[in-house]
Length: 135
Image (cartoon, rainbow, N blue to C red; front, side, top):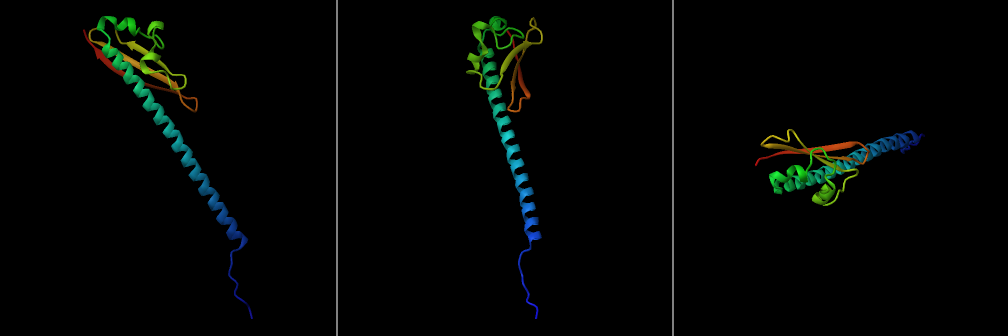
């Protein structure tokens, strides 16, 4: 008489292990992607805060003093009024701020503040804000 034996075969165990490995790899990739997005969002928040601080400093500067305190196209500002002090120190990797003007003789004066940095992967990131000032 034949006895009915039930159990797990080696093939079934291997298939289960392969499924678990693929599921684990997918979960790890999702986790790493979310970490990268989280880091980029944190950097974006810091960049926007620095841009807002720059715009507030520009807003508080007398119109006649704008081109002196925020010269057109000078990276990180003049030596006597470096932009790092305005934003509370650069915290992003290779962070730089440039203030530029569409036309320095126009009124209202259109001002663009551009911030660039290098992300965790080494890619260049940039954000900017534009405002207008009048006499």
